[in-house]
Figure 1 (cartoon, rainbow, N blue to C red):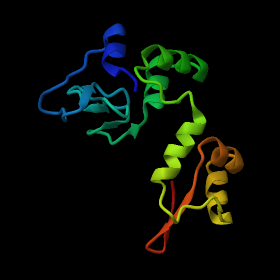
Figure 2 (cartoon, one colour):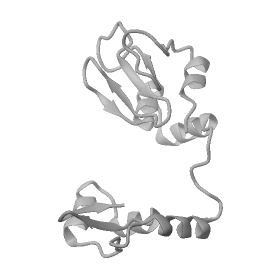
Figure 3 (cartoon, rainbow, N blue to C red):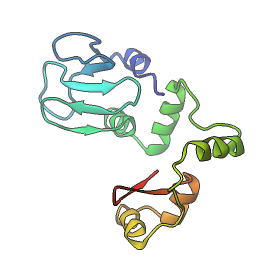
Length: 148
């Protein structure tokens, strides 16, 4: 998790934790994408996702940092590391795989169809790499397929 409050404090960015436009679990700042004067850009404290309730712009913490810092992705990674409060990448991958397999539905499969591979390719991903790196599975539920 990214410590957005500490980041804002260190960069002297005013944020609101409560008030008319603030939802519980979010902090709000002036939107950097529109002419907002009432702190309509809400950032979810846990996920880092943001949404401006005035202009509708939304995204994740990475794109927000990119916009605020106006710098390379390499620098964004360094900033993220500085304010990261949890390690999302467990040290023991084998144990993690076993834990994931325990919670996967029985219908989950590693057999991806061309429609799913093309979906990933259209979004400029390398399907084989993404499937392996994130250990993706397909699940069929009510005649719909989901990636899990």
